[in-house]
Image (cartoon, rainbow over all chains, first blue to last red; front, side, top):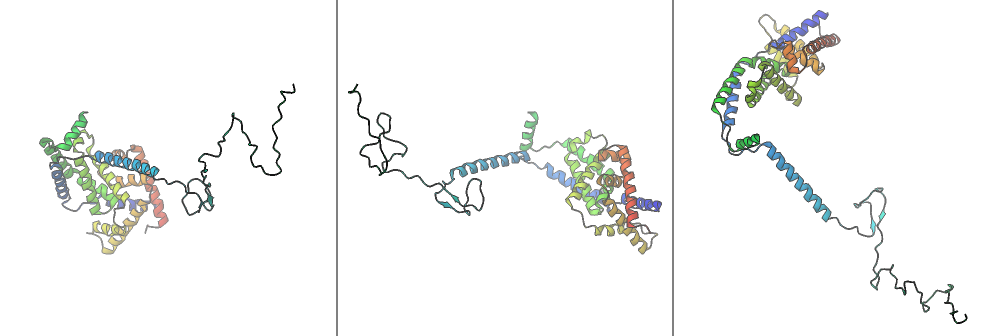
Amino acid sequence: MKENYDEQIDRTLRLLGSATPVPGMEDRIAARLAQAHVSAETPRFFRPPQLVFGLAAAAVACVVIVAGSISHSRHILPIAPGLHLPGESQPGVGAASAAHVAPQPVTTLPQDRPRSVRQTENGRAVISSHAKKPAGIAVPKPLPSTEGTR
Amino acid sequence: MSSYSGQIAGWMAPDFSPAMTVDSTETITALVAEYSAALYRVAYSVMRNSAEAEDAVQEAFMRVLKHRDKLGEIRDIRVWLVRITWNVVLDKKRRGKTRPESDDIADFARVLPSADRRADEEIISSQEHARILALIDRLPAKERQALLLSAVEELSTVQIAAVLGTTESSVRSRIFRARRELSALLEKEGVSQ
């Protein structure tokens, strides 16, 4: 049985190895080679290689990336105050379903100065005695001068 | 720097050197006459289609034409050509540009010697060959390639080893393993009469 298999394999391999081309193959190959040879010999005054095309394409890609990046950074819009719904695009990391409340805007004072700056005398905070104070809050009075008693 | 200037010159002017062109053309024509049939068999062992095999041989010689300036450096021209053809064929096979497998049976039936055979015997034989070839395709790549190249009578084991980039003993063991595995597959499939 084993010999039978070997015979079958040998027959198939012999058949495979004895394949003959269709007559005229050499002529067809020669004709194709001659055609290719003629086209290769035609004068070409400027024949940039693929390397040049590759470098040019890479340069264009770099320019597009840089220009796109600059354009993107210039067109970033400020975050508008108020309620941002989940459907809107938001920066940062967070749950997609969460409602993100933006910080409230800081209003400018009518006096046109920030709230944190105090007008002081001699570098100390002074509460005017005429200041209107809410009831129930004791404000210490200045002590009488003791220099005369000594 | 000289190669750079040579490249620049190549862009600006045609590379035309009549003496070398005539020589290389004659050399390649002689190579076609001497080796095209063997290369066809190499290609046919993988493609199993006469048109595709011929196309592969043509493409192989086109590559030879492209690298004609290296012809003088080649030590074993037969191995070099077979290796080029082998690469072309494997590329084609990889790209799946072969005809459907069902066409192979008809191809085999056509090339079978029919002088002393009856028509039904021919059909059975061609089907048997097609089934064995299908089983060969199921072998591991290394074993399959060694077995297929061993079918080409013009190639010695040393040359097959050079084409496959391995040693002669490795080729022998691959062929042995391929045949053993093929026998096992045949026994499993019950191909024998």
